[in-house]
Length: 325
Image (tube, rainbow, N blue to C red; front, top):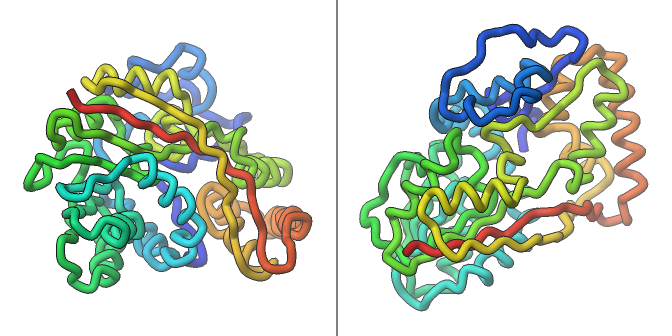
């Protein structure tokens, strides 16, 4: 991936607790009404996520989208075991339409067509840079399309699919219940949604440990927040409530603890750890001394996990499965 993932308005939020402005006006969106009183008085940064009215297409089509597109080969290798497990759980039929939500650069959609050549595969995403990579990879393959579409509000053509799958693409909706209801309308009766989401930050040391290192050397504290972001569906009870409120039935969830394997030298793994997400955002704003201290500690963290050919980092995700009545 590129040298640094830019700050997102919703997915990475750092704050300096001593200076947080907890008195700023509260958002009036439906999502805001669901925040507990304690959440309203913690930090302004945890509230910032609630000002997003729709999927942030500007973010995904700007420098961040281009950086994710550039880093697609590495991320797809790392997440390949998750994608394979996802498709096994989805029970893809021999024919019909399969929609990949948040398809990004198309790795999962392409895997669908490789394993199930008789289906029509449709990848949808809001990021034009990533869709460009997906289309280039597809090499005009038959029965495969990539479409720019906001899954929270849009409707594919045709909207009579057998399956919806998503590899970590469901967590970025400002109103997940409304998005889930919209996607339910894409399926034939009996069609299914199968997706992967991250469990809690604390269950994912590949990121939690790094966030802790940053906090140790700076005045910044990172919290996932309650809005769109990688951990927005980390609570299984809340996720079930959203899906059932959106009209889905037979909701099932199962933990999926697969390691993230990062092949390469210690320097390669170090770049992966430092140049993405909240760590990159925090380092961009840190002093030179703080950056050096963080890099030194992360380098030691990587060295302790490197086996000579790469590093295996524990990760915890969850598989979601639901049926459209």
